[in-house]
Image 1: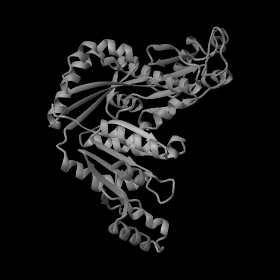
Image 2: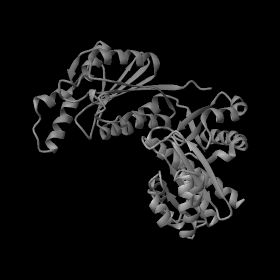
Image 3: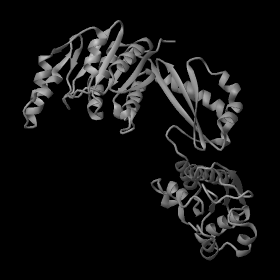
Image 4: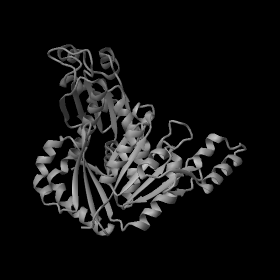
Length: 419
């Protein structure tokens, strides 16, 4: 297999460490490197500190072929990247006439005079190749030393992206014979990571060395990412598809989509495919499931409406849950959620009624019904399918996990009713 070309991304700035701004640059850089076959092996965030920066550069040169640096290129005293790079390479800062002319022209185009502070931006490490930044004043700097490439760019996202797209990526493609990296995601719901791993362990062991599997768990879902390395994308894609065909019989009941699919979209496709409609009755989720459903364009084709009877009075008066059921079983019970789903389906003349009722927390729990206890139900007109959940003590997490579990119960019910 072709030797991989590796990269490290170094983000510089105290504001990143303090959490004052989000580092969107490193995410974008990772995606762009992946597209051209460069494997990002590490991301490092450091503050505006000379020794920390030197240490990061030294460590990156050991780990990666390409070091992409963003930030610390402004004209003020806390912007240290140029001076630290000069120290790292044993060079000095010198005036680059082309850089000075570019900065002067940029200020002139904006009707401003070049100040002494901004003039300092034309002083760069003597061993760098100056890369013109046509959308800002901070320069790009390209270094090639001891078989490694360092590229320093401004932290302003649109300036960094300009330099990457116009200068850096074309240079990398010219310098390296880059492999193809192909990804495909298999999206699952209703099964935990460890159980999923047990189901597919034999299949996983038979994957060839150039195809890697990663488990990507999130709240309520697990994504399986297959990553293939090679030289021809079409061949890699076909090979990955062959392995997925062997995988699906093992876990088909948990798979709802691939790549960019999301669960609400998959639900919408199923309802449209079979010409079915949906109604909701939400208590503990407070309309969150409705939000997920209606966030999908075209959801009016299959979503008839919903009710949020948060208090028991309105579960009875508006939705129609019987007082006897509420008194005997309580709002958080299988009996109550069963009636909620049935009445929602009938009131909105829908094929499926989906309901939730639980104790989201952090208060309101008892020994018999603790925080995190949730009941969900889906009524298809022939039967009502229910599920008991015992979740966490975190309110936001519980609402999200309930919504995912309810949508998955709906997915299972649709498949059961239409096959």
